[in-house]
Length: 243
Image (cartoon, rainbow, N blue to C red):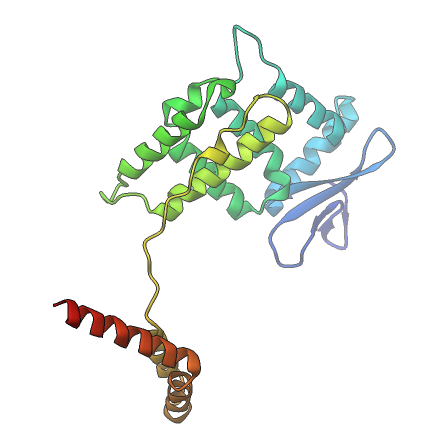
């Protein structure tokens, strides 16, 4: 590979010190093209592969490669319908240039762990309805990790979010008649909110003593805090009178 100033020609970081390398080259169509390579070694390998393809006459422009992928995704027959798992993999491949390496890894792990292992991944995408998705969510709530702990609602909601994007893409491309995901609700996260006074004490404790005490007293003397105290007092008196 040609080098200039000890750097690979056509290989560069789009954002400095990000570790995310892109390649730039002139194709057989006379235009300059850019592609995301990933790490520096992955970018260098992709650059070499593109140069070889250009030399051999087998190179296709990014637009042509996207068209081939799209045709493969949308093509389905009665004997071999497009499954949800296959479409999910194709969707992730299409999104790869727009994702960071960490996000791509997380999406791939999420799909492999929580979607591909379920029977729903082998069903034709056109036959997946909200009932099937709800059964998947139910199975995920009953699933245990290697540490014998249940999956968190946040993790399950992340899987639901990815399926929402996947089905929205399939619906936009007319692979499915109806999108089932609007009928699937997210799981509720356990409430971790603190009371008003507890939150103030926690905030004040992280400040210098004089500043923290002044902030706590000022907030507790505010009209909003007074209304909360009066409401709590009325509730207590109501409970005592009922007793």
